[in-house]
Length: 266
Image (tube, rainbow, N blue to C red):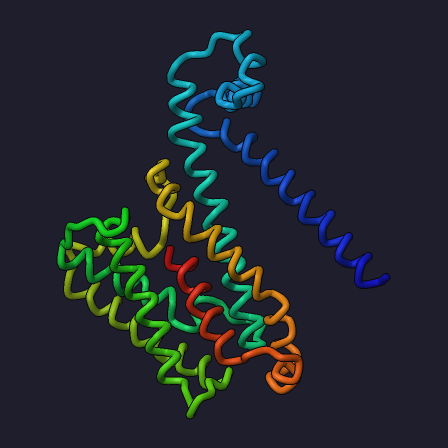
C-alpha cells in the first residue's frame, strides 16, 4: 500500500509540474521587447488549436503578434523544454548507473566531446548537412558518441566496466577534450566568439527547424530509458543484487550509456 501511495503521490506531482510548465509557457510567451499582453498571447495560441480557434477570433490582433509568438517565442519555449527534459533524464540515468549523485553528462565526457566536435567544425569552416543536422551539430553529435565509446573501452576490465573506472576515465577524457578546446580557442582567435557562443549555448536563434531536429531523438530516447527504469533501479542496489534479479548488467549499461549520450548530444 505504501508503494502504491508513493506512486500515486509522484503521479500527482508530475501532473502538477506538467500543468505548471504549460501555464508558465503561455505566460512567458508574452514576455519580450514587444508589448503583448497575456490575454493577447493566449488568443494567438488558441488561434492554432482546431476546436478552440473560434474563441480567439472575437478580437482582431496585428499580424506581427502571430509572428512574434508563434515563430519566435514558441519555438524557444518548446526547444528549451525538450532540452531540459533530455538533460534531466540523462543526468538521472548517469547518477543511477554510476551510483553517484554528482554524475552528469560531463563526467563521462559526452558534453566535452560534443564541444570538441563543434569546435573542429567551426575552425575548419565545414559546410554540410547530415540527416537534417548542420555541420556543427552533426560533428558535435558524432564526437559525443565517439567520446562515450572511447571512455567505455578505456574503462573495460575484461568483460566488465566498473563504475569507478568509468567515472575516472570519463573525467580524464573530459579534461583532455576541454583542454583541447581551450588550446584551439587560443590559436584560432578569429573563431573565438563562435566557439564560446556555441559552447555556452543559447536559444536565441531557435526556430521550428531546430525543434524538428530533436523531435524524434529526444522523445524516443526518453521512452527507451523509461523502459529500462526498473533495471536501473535494481542496478542501484548493487551489481550482484541486480544480476541475481535477472538484469544483464553490461548490456544494460551499454544501452543506457548510448541512449543517454544520444539525447544529450541531440
